[in-house]
Amino acid sequence: MSYKSTLMYYDLIHYNYFKRFHDYYYSRIIIFSVNFQKFTDFKNAIDKSNPLACLLKGISSLQAAGAELILVVANSPLLVFHELEK
Image 1 (cartoon, one colour):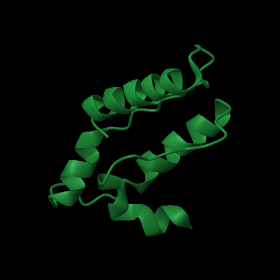
Image 2 (cartoon, helix red, strand yellow; image 1 turned 90 degrees about the horizontal axis):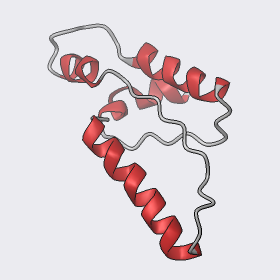
Image 3 (cartoon, one colour; image 1 turned 180 degrees about the vertical axis):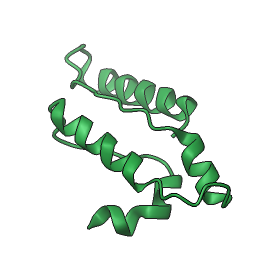
């Protein structure tokens, strides 16, 4: 969820696409960056508010932008995964 992992995944997706297809017809990628500190504070019990609303806002924004698939590639959202799944 940090910017470093976002950059890494973005790079890996494009690198592997080019390696496989040898062209630049990449799929459109929409990135919604969440406030990672909210998850850190929640995990450390500094902030008792649930970061679920932050994730739901991101999901809604991605859907509004036309996303057909949403990936969450981080461990921190697992804290609220079962609530998110509902």
